[in-house]
Length: 376
Image (cartoon, rainbow, N blue to C red):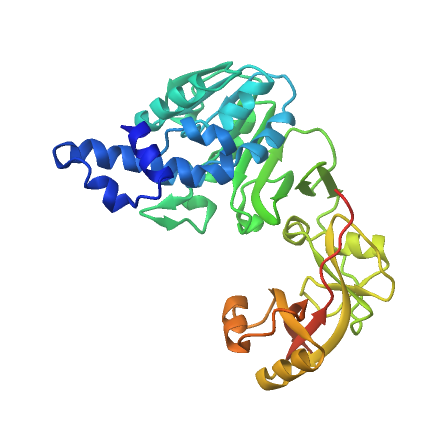
């Protein structure tokens, strides 16, 4: 059935057309369509491995992308690792590639998905058991946990609302020498029962996850990691946030990597670049000299315009420019809404980047040349 649906999808048929193939097999068709839809959605996270993946919608949304999961798995070395909330097995695929591991989950349906997903994986050294991850019913040297952050279709805002709650971290610490707990990048770290290192991980321009690390044996408190052609990190041993000076916009603007923003390491990057903030607590940096860094988009400034829609349209057209990428921080209009409001431009015009923010409390547009950044 999945093969038939795949052939029809490849031919461009819609889900409704496929459902009409065989009314008598409607339940099977719906089930096959569901599996196929999840596999299509999974490609961004799992690449070609998505073609043989079994997942439900929530399980897929909670799973880390395989590239990000591999980074986390490598930090465990070759030690025996327990995945306390293994779900559909996304993290286990990465853990199994580097050494022995065991997955634990209370949800038997997802546990069966993980079993099938791992069975299709080339390097499978994982075992699976049904159990309550709150009490870590396994023996291992290290553990990783990815508590559920959705309840009734809504995101849990507090760590106490995770399932299992982050209140179990001290108990897991007693059982495992090395522990990694995945949390939302937006989590307020002040509510944690204990904290050592927090690592924010970006991939393909987005901050994908935050991970609490315990037992690493170093002094790191905050770390930003960027996964690209090469994986790079910037870290601080202090909880004290280094704040760069605030000055007017210079000749160059920098838009820092989102993991760097989340980890509050903007001050460290500013020191490297000889740069400053253009607005307090807004993560744009500036300098008068061009510096290329993998930690930020480098945007040569063309013009600074107080925001008025008609004025912005006039400046763009007079200079033969058209909006390309639109970025915003502390600005009330969504980028695509602003693009629609600006209207159509001559396709022969030069694309520029619009950086939308507030300076001295006033809405401001910084018109910049196209993005440049050093090779990663």
